[in-house]
Image (tube, rainbow, N blue to C red; front, side):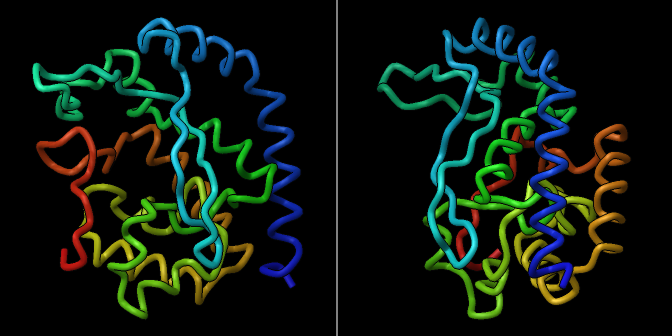
Length: 201
C-alpha cells in the first residue's frame, strides 16, 4: 500500500511544503548562480525515469560553459565555479528537483536518475532500478554516493527497489541529512564529479 499510494502522496505533500519554506533560499541561489554562470542558474538535462520514460531533470547549474581553443568544454573540475562548488558540497544543487517531484517525474527517495545513454549498458538485473520513480536521494547515496563503484551503486539501487517501505525511506531521509552536513562521497577521488559508466565498472 505504501509503495502504490502513500509514497506518492507523501512525495507531493513534502515537496509543496519544502518549496514554500525554502523559497527565500531558492531566490538567493538563483541570483548568485545567474551571476556566476552568465545568466544561467539552472541546468536542465534529459534523464530516464520510471520504466525508462525520459523526462527533463532540473538542477542548479554548478559549472560554467567555458571552452578551450578548439571549442570543446573544459574538464568539469575547471568549470566548477566557487559558488557552484559550495552548492554542490551542500547538495543545494538538488533543490530544483522538488519541481520534478511535484510533476510526478521523481520521488523524494529512489535510485538516482542517470544519463539516457546508459540504458543500453545495463544488465538485466541493473535495469530493475527503473521499476520505480527515481529519487532526489537514495540508498546508494547514503552508502557512498560518488565514492563507490557503479556496480555497487546498482546493487544498492536494486536492493532498494525490492525493499521499499516507509521505515526504509525514513532512514534514508535522515541519513541524507547527516551526509549533507558531513559532506561525504560528493565526488570520486581526484575528480569534481564521478566517472562515466561504461558498462563494466
